[in-house]
Image (cartoon, rainbow, N blue to C red; front, side, top):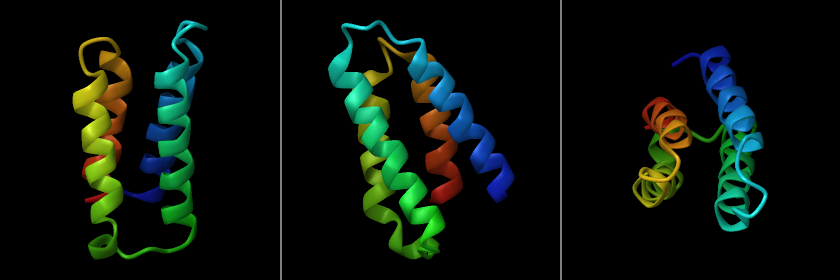
Length: 84
């Protein structure tokens, strides 16, 4: 996935994050941290082979939130595939 596609997926993720219920603090914090980690890896020029821990973390979030937040997890899945 090109950077602009990754940027678009991150933007969709941020938009969906904004739609979370105010009481869903745990999911919000977790996803916000993942976004920060993703942006750090991308802007830092981390090579694909070094992104394993980040991709694993994203995959864990997908499994954790897939039932309650299917759109969030769909965007996270796109991002994980791009980074992996």
